[in-house]
Length: 209
Image (cartoon, rainbow, N blue to C red; front, side):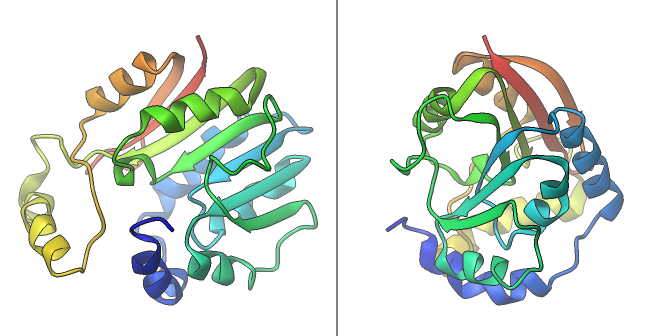
């Protein structure tokens, strides 16, 4: 069992009911993802949460497999009225059911800052992608220096919240950290963006190098 699975399962119902904080940034993210997905694509989303993005993107592809290690999150995802080409699974990227070179795209949104060691994740993504496949991620970069008072205060509060069991593991990354991490893992970055800009949720499209 993943260390934070109980944390996210406990939060799942409230998470599903919570409105998206910046709808314009979310729609822009979806638009940029759609631009990378061919109509016949087989897509894997890791860390799908309650399945909102899967519901929105599935009509643009052939098959959409959405996974999360939290049983509670996937239980909420199953309540959605999604197209027939969507599958929700309690799993992570290392699930042995996923075959080598079987996906046209792997998507990880709001996930990589929550992973203590991402290098095995990147290696597994490379293993799962077909030749010419694409890895798409978006990561909150709260390691940036100029976050402003509100987000700077949140950054200071996270360690206390973790000690109280009110926050999961979090990495304090900058946009440069993310770009370097992804390229060091063997990907070639072809597009970046920040949706929203402040605090930067860093969007990266990468191909196998």
